[in-house]
Amino acid sequence: MAMSASARLSKTVKQQYMELPQGDKVQAMYVWIDGTGEGLRCKTRTLDSEPKSIDELPEWNFDGSSTFQSEGSNSDMYLIPSAMFRDPFRKDPNKLVLCEVLKYNRKPAETNLRLTCKKVMDMVEDQIPWFGMEQEYTILGTDGHPFGWPSNGFPGPQGPYYCGVGADKAYGRDIVEAHYRACLYAGVMICGTNAEVMPAQWEFQVGPCEGINMGDHLWVARFILHRVCEDFGVVASFDPKPIPGNWNGAGCHTNFSTKEMREEGGLKAIEESIERLAKRHSYHIRAYDPKGGLDNARRLTGHHETSNIHEFSAGVANRGASIRIPRSVGQEKKGYFEDRRPSANCDPYAVTEAMIRTCLLSEEGDEPVDY
Image (tube, rainbow, N blue to C red; front, side):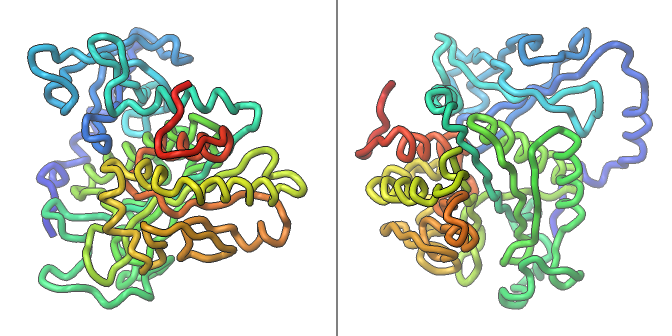
């Protein structure tokens, strides 16, 4: 099991420094999405006092030529604070600051999908859209080998691992527990976690979040997971099919509802949204992973609890469908539905924006409308 060298450094020695008083100063770690649309970057600055709101945080900049976001000859990019959380690693009063990225001309960077998502969310805020996203991930060694798997073979076939307990079934629970508590401390709307079908694969759920908060909270939950794994010397992978063959892939199932869907007779609004989604399958597939559907094609095969990427389907309690209506929703005639197509490495801003455009703004065709 290849663990990072930094994990072997003494955390006890580090702790004596972390307990030193910091006076009135505050460390703010600025976090942003890099040019891959998947990777996260971060750097820290000192503030003179604890910020009480986003408005009190200064803009900052970074070298975009080192993050796949600009050329070296014109590399300054702007960091615009967008959401603030407590820092579970340095603790209060220190902060994690999720930022949007703007280019030198103040236009959004190509992987800054938050800006248009926020615009679309603002258009439908009176409908109170709620989202919940189920983030699957795989714990790997730094050599890319799944955590706890035999070094020259495979564990036993899938079956005993989902929600499993015991050293032969649950691989890496310490990481899951540390991440869960860190998210609660930070103020992330994490609402659950479980071991997944493939050994060394886990899931955490974030939500319900209204509008733009879904993307903000999921990205910060991902950042915290990467940071926790760094301490343990392992890697969190959001690859939608990390191990080829007869093993489950990793998705980010997205649950969605509006005020109308949650009220009596809401099933009618749910069914209308599903009809709109059925007519726009290819648009959503392109929005549901960073490579326009190529990553998800490895996962959405119609096997291992997935739908086929080329076909749209919907059903009550059907985990092999594109859209699943929970059985309780079918019985109560109100609630929410689950889009099972988004990949584990999706951008939640892109996913939630696409759902709003199709379900609530009634857009059609293969391209988004420019408002």
